[in-house]
Amino acid sequence: MTKLSVNINKFAVLRNSRGGNNPDVIKAAIDAQRFGADGITVHPRPDERHIRYSDVREIKKIVTTEFNIEGNCREQKFVDLVLETKPHQVTLVPDALGQITSNHGWDTIANKEYLKEMVGLFKNKNIRVSIFVDPVIGMIEGAKETGTDRIELYTEGFAVAYLKDKNKSVERYVTAAENAHQLGLGINAGHDLDLHNLKFFRQNVPYLDEVSIGHALICDALYLGFENTIQMYKRQLAE
Ligand SMILES: CC(=O)[C@@H](O)[C@H](O)COP(=O)(O)O
Ligand SMILES: NCC(=O)COP(=O)(O)O
Image 1 (tube, protein in one colour):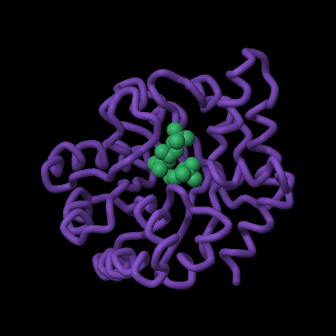
Image 2 (image 1 turned 120 degrees about the vertical axis):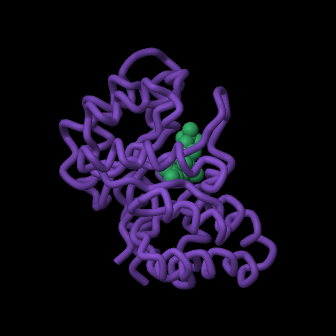
Image 3 (image 1 turned 135 degrees about the vertical axis):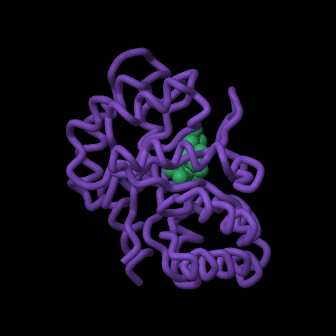
């Protein structure tokens, strides 16, 4: 069964807009798990415009499912935070400073030696490592050579293409997942997955261990309620 990790960054965006503690991101993490999430994802960024480094430390204390921290390991502050909090999984994402949201995967060939070093650092602390990649065979083969446990397929391209041609939108992801599985890598996916495209993605892309979903899920929760929304996303993964 593909796991649903709920990304709670957007709770922090709302909280930060007023400077108080409403909504409470710790409560959001506790509730997400109570409502059926299989994991909690956070993606701290250097400007702390949503999840703050201090939030991550607090969330670690209450996670009873699986904790996934995503971010750019070129930031020493991020590396230190992950080594300190020891989540179940770290997802390495090659964001540029000030980027609005993640928009590309790693070039695992150009950065192979660097990624090898990072993967080793986290794996030595028993933290599972996932590398964010585009659905490109060369990048997946490169990821394998870094020693990573998993890849996370960057799905924005799928989400955009899905609106025009469902069958074509998923082709590269199917090939990528088959390739990754053959190489012995676990497979995660995320970015712009939503209630419309998730079921199709899950039914077509094989060997999917986990999806992490934030933006669309939190938007849906405004209309449908957080508990109901998490259950709806879970059903898309089960059907
Ligand atoms: C790696 C990825 O696709 C997500 O972590 C996404 O970037 C969420 O980050 P934001 O909440 O800052 O958009
Ligand atoms: N890894 C993807 C993630 O955590 C959430 O991405 P999105 O659903 O906010 O686009």
